[in-house]
Amino acid sequence: MLTSTLPELIKPIKLARQGLILKGTIPLEQMKRLTADAFASDGIVDVDAAFIKDGEGYPLLQGIVKTCVQLQCQRCLQGVDVKLEVELTLAFVTKESRLEQVPSIYEAILLDSEEISLVKLLEDELILLLPIMAYHDNCEAYQYRTDEELKAEKEGDLKPENPFDVLKQLKSNK
Image (cartoon, rainbow, N blue to C red; front, side, top):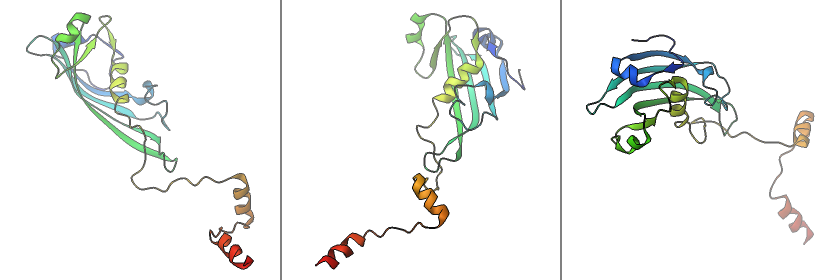
C-alpha cells in the first residue's frame, strides 16, 4: 500500500499484478493544465484507488479522485470553489488491437510504454470534469462602467438617467 505523497510515474500492469492500493495526495500545483485558468494552484488532490485484475485479466485502476479548484465566476468575476470528484475504472492495454476488446464498463487506456505518469493520468480525468462556465449560485453580475462613468462617480456627478426623459421632451414640444 502506498500512502502520503504519491509517485510521479507508475507501472500499472505490474501494480495490478501486485494488487497495490494507492491512498494519498498529489499537490495541485503539479497539475499545470488543470490549474492554468485557476485563481490559485494551492491545494491537494486526494486519491483513493486500487490496482487490480478483473476476471478477464485486464489490469484496472479503480477508485475515487477528489479536489477543489478555485476558478473565476463568470457573473461577478470573483473566485468560486469548484469541487471535482471522479470515480475511476480504467483498464490498461499495451496493444491497439486490444482496445476494442475491453468491456464497455471500463475506460480503456493504451500504454505506449511500461510506465505512465500518474499525475497526467489523473489530471486528464479531472479536466474532463471542469464546468464550461463556473459561477456562484447566488451573486450579482459584474457591472461594467466606462472611464467617464467611473470619473463622474468619484466626483459625485453621476445622476441616473430616466428613460422617460425623451418622452417628456416630445410632450413639451407640442
